[in-house]
Length: 318
Image (cartoon, one colour):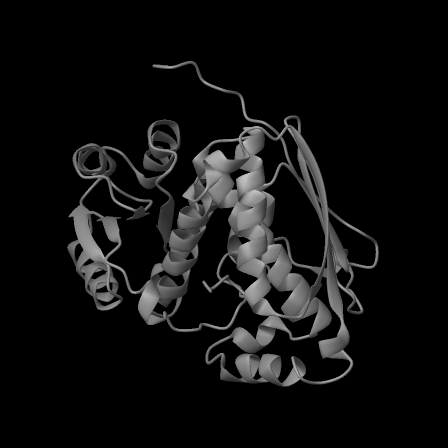
């Protein structure tokens, strides 16, 4: 299973260690070398570019599986590259680098079309899980889409036990259903998949198991140990996650409710505030709010409603 923002950082298994092609874009030689070395150690086949213009040339000639791009670059910066990729190559997700001083641009990039972000300061810790999350979301979205093309409306209800292994198949199920409804392009379905996974992981880890994301600061061993303990411990292990989805060609509406004590939604720091970009708590909510059109919490904080509506389609060649 791949690793969401708030999930324990499980290692890749052997079947996942594929030579996925990663394009890294950065005009800083030291940062480019650092990212390339790390990605190669993770098993990726790496190509590089020094700005957005050069990156697009690489994408046209040798399409990668995903792109990792800095925001501050000459000729075409990271935000402009995200826009070009979304319009011209929506099936190739873009992960952005962030550094001090680029937080506001990072939030813009997420809203524009980036699939995720990593901070340069925390690159060794964050990059493995982020790349794996995005790569798997992209692979899930592309699998078996044609099977459901005739569907025009669907209502689904699930009651999930506290098993992390159920999250990825459920996300894939919803991505395929959205493809059948032709609600959005591949890029957006990848982003919706990441938002759904973040919400489901929040319901599991923070809602039902009551494990605080504050334990993920620095060494996340206590966080992982508490999760493992509470997956076997009453009353946490007996709780379930309730999922409702209403899908049509006009709208996708997802309601996810856990059986935990909830929280005061107003008490959360604003995840769209650039100053909070590097905080472990709220990262999932930032992605959810960036990728969905509407996000609502119930007053007790144990239910989230996420809505995605059709995009404005561009005519061919525009």
